[in-house]
Length: 239
Image (tube, rainbow, N blue to C red; front, top):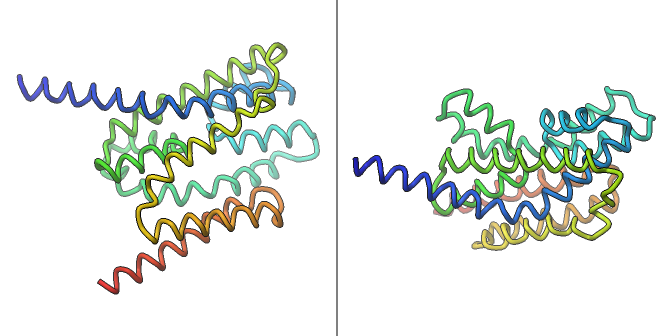
């Protein structure tokens, strides 16, 4: 009986932790979701279609790019799919971190957690895993809560798109980068992490200035991964 109560208390604690960690993310999720719904209606999609897109695709950056290409009317479906695929290649790097944990779970749960992998959910789960160890319930809670918030925000944006001005005009789009900075800074605890962050930032800025489209994201991610891998290997050999 005591073990059962202790387990329930632990689960309750994890749910509160999920709620506390996800609330700051809402400052970025909600305005972007509203804007996605507004853009979807502007591009000619119905409220159901844009909401279904958020539920099935669940990739903010890719959705914005796809909607922009649809609105311009200059791109075919093949080009849209290819472009969004390139933008989402960064998920391969995040997925590589999560795979060892997901492989230990029942396959349906692992598939669901992989589907719900986003920049925000990865940042929260990875940060907590480093501090307290990986917890599948926490991972599930974060993925599910952020997923529902994204769908709801998209639906509301699409439903009231004629009454809601573009939230990004308010400058709220800075809330998401600011949230990521608060997650990143506490993790800069050693020289390797600091160098990797600086390489990623430098490549991202230079790439945004000189590379077309969203290639700067991929270049920054690959460069930072290679540098981090080489530094970790060097540190391991020294030990």
